[in-house]
Every structure is written in C-alpha cells, then in structure tokens.
Amino acid sequence: MFSEAKGDSVQIAREYMDSLLVETRVVGAERPDTTFRFLGETFSTPVMTAALSHLDLVSMAAGAKQAGACVSIGMGGNGEMGEILATGAKVMKIIKPYADEKEILSRLEYAEENGALAVGMDVEHAVNTDDAEDSVVMGLQMKQPTLAELEKYIRHTKLPFFIKGALSVQDALRCRDLGAAGLVLSHHNGLTRFAVPPVMVLPEIRKAIGKDLLLIADGGIESGVDAFKALARGADAVTMGKALMGPLKENGADGVAETLRKATAQLQAMMIRTGTKNLKHMDPSVIWEPIGYRHG
Image (tube, rainbow, N blue to C red; front, side, top):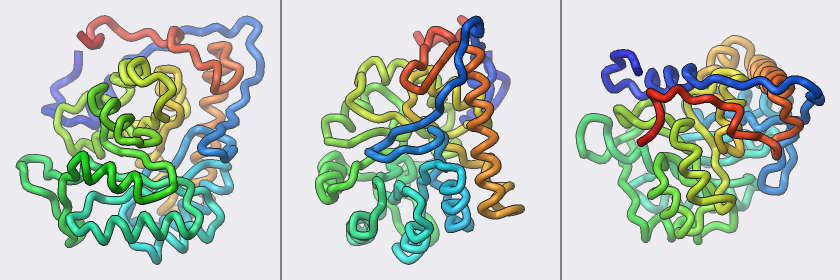
C-alpha cells in the first residue's frame, strides 16, 4: 500500500502511478503514430503543457509550438494571454474562479475574440487547503462557483469549456449535464489532501461518460511512460507541468520543446512494446493494477 505520505496527494499519485505495471505485446508491433487530433486541430503529441502560472509562459508556448503540442495556461491577465496567443500556439486558457464575475467574463471574451482553442475553469482552486474559506490568489478573491454560475460561464462563450478539478464520476456527470466539453482531472498539485490520483479514477469516469466528454489527466505526468499509462486508462490527453519548469527556466522555449519531444519519444516506445499502433487503439488491458490499490 501507500507509504506514510500524510495526506500528500502529489506523493500518493506518484506512488500509484509507479505501481501500475505494463504488459508487453511486442511481437508483430508496428511503429506507432502519436498524432493527436483535438478540438479540430492536429498535434504531434497528446502531451500538453499544464496550466502553469507565474512563469515565462510566452516561451513555454513557443516551445510547445516547436514540439507540436497544445498549450494550457493558468492565471494571468488578458495582456499576457495576448502575448501567448501571438506565438501561434494553440492555447487553452484556464480561468480562476474569481469572486468578481467581471474578471471571468473578461477573460472568456478575450480568449474567444483572440483565437484561443478552448477555455476552462479550475474550480478546485476556490477553497483553501486546510479550512473552508474561499482562497485569495495573488491578491484576488476566489469564490466556489455554483452550478448555475458554471452553466452561465459555459454558455457565455462559443469556445469548448473544460472544468478542471473534477475527480469523481459524480462530478463528471454534472459537468456533462452543464454542457462542458471536457474535464481536466486534477487535485491542483495536492490542494486536496488524500485526493484520489487522477489516473486511478480515470477508468470509472470513462466508463460512466463514454465519449461524451474529453478527459485530460493533470498532475504527476513526468515522462512518456506516465503519459502512456494515463492514456491507456482512458485519458484523451495528459498535461506536463513540473517536468517543464526546470527546462523552461534554464533553456526557455528550446528546453520546453526538448522535454516534450523526449516525452513523446518515450510514449512511442511504450506504444511499440504494447502493440499500440496509434492513440485510437489504446487498450486498458495492458495495464496491470496491483490488487492492493483496486478501488472498492
């Protein structure tokens, strides 16, 4: 079972990911294709950038574009979003659940008017880790959005809307009924203590919602091997965050591009060893889950 992580959801997710074993099916395997078709666009890889904030996101976007990857970005104003979009990268803007509705609507409108690929909201960032108070992020007050408010935001834009922070079948079904295009399965870098790992809950959510929602696994994706495990268990795409931060700081766009290309090469290697010819033929039965971790 898990080590004494004391509620550290990042460590719990890492241990769970490392517990998953992969069955090889290499005999007769073909060289795989990692081409990723997402929201009408074609990418070289299903490994996206995570919705990072407070970094050089313009360089991050430029590096992702070099690697043929989609970009998600986190907190930041419309000016920064405009600079990121100007790189030519395809961008999903994840918006905080601001208490001031004008902050939300302004970002939704700017994203739509300036060519963003999609938008979303990280609802898990509304409440502090250890109390029930609404959080304050960079001096801005957050608020837990109601179902009516979420539906309003989804309907306010023509762009596909993703809800970040869902980690259950119940939330997935609610998001589907609200009209969301997809989910980013996330515990926001351990914001929820003892959170179920996104890759653990993926199969249940996929079974419940079928192809009604796009599922993006966020958190703990450090390599193409991790990406393969998440994709095989039902994710449409994955995000890479911490693994990009060092290369971004050290080598800018080139560091991001190199890291994403390496992860994609590792993903291809895993696909070869499991006889997976493309992303549409991911087979969950290649993943073996130790009995001690099974849900229920």
